[in-house]
Amino acid sequence: MNIADTIKVINQMQADGVIGSYAVGGAVGATFYLEPVATFDVHIFVHFEPNPDQPIITLKPIFAYLAARGCTHEREYVNIAGTPVQFLAAGTSLVDEAIKQAIPHDLDGTPVWVFTAEHLCAVALKVGRAKDKTRVVQFIEEEAIDQTRFQAILKPHGLADRWEKFESQFLADQP
Amino acid sequence: MSTLIERMLESKRAFRRDLAARPVAEKIRLLEQLSERARVIRRAATARKAAMTPGAPSGPGAAMPPSRNS
Image (cartoon, rainbow over the protein chains, first blue to last red):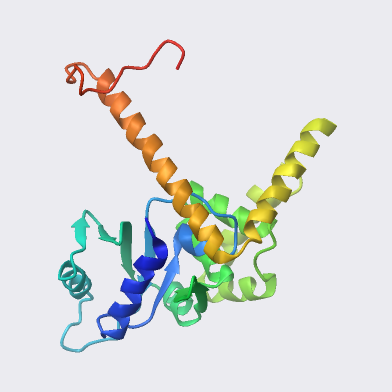
């Protein structure tokens, strides 16, 4: 697993016009703001420009591009530079916004677009698996998010109620 | 909560804060190492489970069943 080398391939794929904007999310994205955690794969969220000739979004061009460069495909992952990568097409307004507002970071000289801490936290809240809930708690406890920006994300994406419930369940002082 | 546990939890929190504050490249390298370690453990656990399954292959190439101490 070498994430910097993986990102180099993805940057090249973007430069070659196969994908538009992209951003790293999931555990790898969270590591840009929190302590590192073990993860099996890298989640790359991709924005596809609407194409009237191709109304259904497909990841086939990505897989074909990578296969031509020797990357193997296993289940929902593509192995890029030894790292299993899962490409996810932006399918919700929240993820669309997260990609648009992603921040450029520098990873050992390799530029990489990563969700903001607030969007990572909002996406984790929305997905809501046990590990996502743990991540939300980490973001809050580590004070890694700006609460004003976070609240501004929750409301328009219909997450205000979920946040209220989460807060009372996991962040209240008393059980 | 006892003072000892409180101290231990605070120490853990401090360590996590220290890890979070490290440069991104270093954190990503740590993530890679942790992930590799997790993969090795998962592989071993899978092999162990397979060895415990009735009818699983045995012999020099097969995974060892768990010992009484495991």
